[in-house]
Image 1 (cartoon, rainbow, N blue to C red):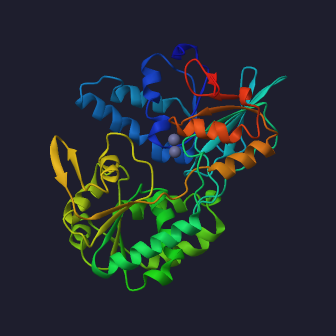
Image 2: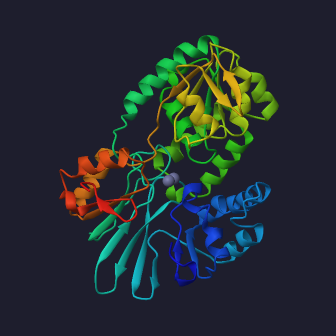
Image 3: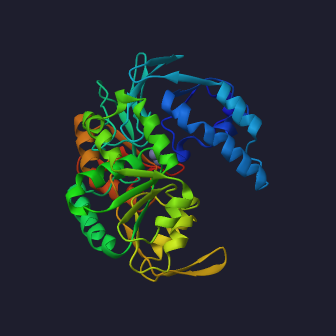
Length: 385
Ligand SMILES: [Zn+2]
Ligand SMILES: [Zn+2]
């Protein structure tokens, strides 16, 4: 690992934990230079540091403490899209990534030399956020995200599938969507709005946390799609925001669509699941990433056997579980068109587990010479070896 004391700057792409939870660890190890991020990343992401510091302390894993988290906060410098930050011989331009509120990509240019485009998570086609914006200059090399880049998500087909499942399930039971309060919750609400003719006479009920997150989102109108701004008021008129007890009461009742945090089902959404788990008329629809070891991952993996082990106890369920991804990342089409419009630069694939990253490398090798595609292993190698 690079010695944190030798780093001149840290740029944070977005608020998701896999991209920023370890930053206080750098500070603990001696990092004391600026940490650049957008205002939403600061407002919504940084509070996770203290949360994680507490969890780590309780677990007896001293990766970083609350003091390290607070010291890291002091180093933050806010940036906006279009800003150019100079660090020594480098110019770093902040670009709009379209994946989460405040998400950014970075074009790193040597003043008289090469250009590198770094993409963390990026997206086009959100119902809420403005689309990824390409940098104006072509890079020599591009670091791209391989986590979802090898498949194609057809959102029209996804909507048809959702309409069908909701249509028959809600006649006799309720449907739970585990979501993140900022981002996936609004994305899901907009999708439900787009199929509202197919889900008439149903009630959408969501947590107070989702209501607050939706309000926070509205503070950043510059990042939001115009269609979202036009429709969200109408969308919200039909939603019941309720306290946890009321939501638990609605669980299992016919005609209720429930949106609740969290996506990994380690918190409130799991409590709702426990209310409906013996009800074969109800359903859980998972639409996103499920980290290994989480309740959501175990549940979705067990959706056909309807039994798994949780906390060393067997957990048997009868409610139906569906895995229906909603597009929050670049897919293969997006990656191919970006590679072409950026002039087929050298590619470095990161943020993906094999075999998915290998599949993406294979697909992109139709556009870029295989030896110019590097895979994220240490030391890096081309996908041919
Ligand atoms: Zn992300
Ligand atoms: Zn990510």
